[in-house]
Length: 171
Image (cartoon, rainbow, N blue to C red; front, side, top):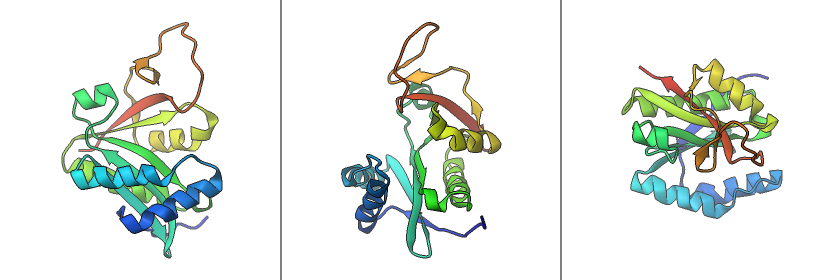
C-alpha cells in the first residue's frame, strides 16, 4: 500500500461522534463517553490525544498519558503511549508510524524515555512487531495482568487486561 501523509492534530469536541461511530461499525467497545473523558483529560494536561485524518476522513488516534497508570512507568516518570488505534482500512499506509513519531516527539520534550504496553493475543501481533521495529524493548518485568505481575503457575483469563510493557530511549 502507498504511504499517505495524514493530518495529525489534537482531539476536538467535533471529532467525538465520528470516532465513536467508526469503532462502533467495527464492533469495538469505544463509546463516545470514552472520548469525552479523553477530551477533559487533555484539557487538564493529564493526556494528549492525537487524531489522524486522511483527506478529511478519520483514520486513527493515540494518546499519551503523562502519568502512566502502569506503576513502574509512573514511579519513573515515563510517559506512556496508550490506546493506539488505526482503522483497518488505513493500516500499512504510514498512519501508525506518523502517530508514533508525533507522540515520541512530544514525549522527548519532557522525558528521555517513552513507554508503551501491548496485549498478548494475536490481535496485537502487528503492534508487537511495530514496537520492536521502532526500537522498543521489554521493560524486563514480564506480563502484567490487571493490577499485578504474573507469577509462574498463575492462571488467568487471557484478554485485553494482560500486557507486556516496553520502553524506548528517545535521546
